[in-house]
Length: 47
Image 1 (cartoon, rainbow, N blue to C red):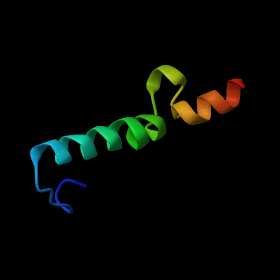
Image 2: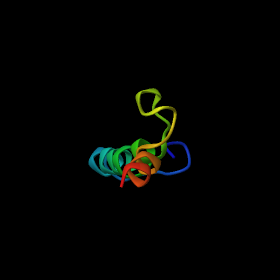
Image 3: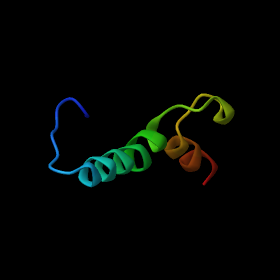
């Protein structure tokens, strides 16, 4: 993401990276404390 995009200000870059980490990466990345599944899959499983 960082190398494919250019931003006019540092603030725009920080906002884009923050959105990526909190909106995509953390919800799809597998977590060992959840038994190796993503938070989205874990929530669907327990719901």
